[in-house]
Image (cartoon, rainbow, N blue to C red):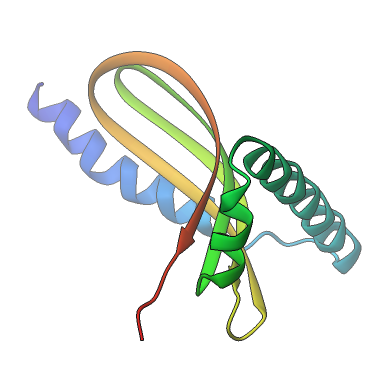
Length: 125
């Protein structure tokens, strides 16, 4: 990688990450519609998880919380990136946090990926 390419990556990656993470300026209705879409995707994902692994329903219910995200990313040659959205649920406090994510990749490669997933966290007392 040339020095110019390194400089571009050094400045472009943080700038891109900052720009994509800046809060969207939208009205309340758009926010509610986006949250409703996320909730629909979460329900579909959890339903598929519970159908495939019925014991996961009890594990998720007893966990401290869980997070469900959908993500899409691409990588061509030395640069790539992706984005996604989802929510994290705190089972103890009952709080739901909606999130967006941005991914920046550097290094040789090529590909496209789409992912949906659920992660639950267990605490010990």
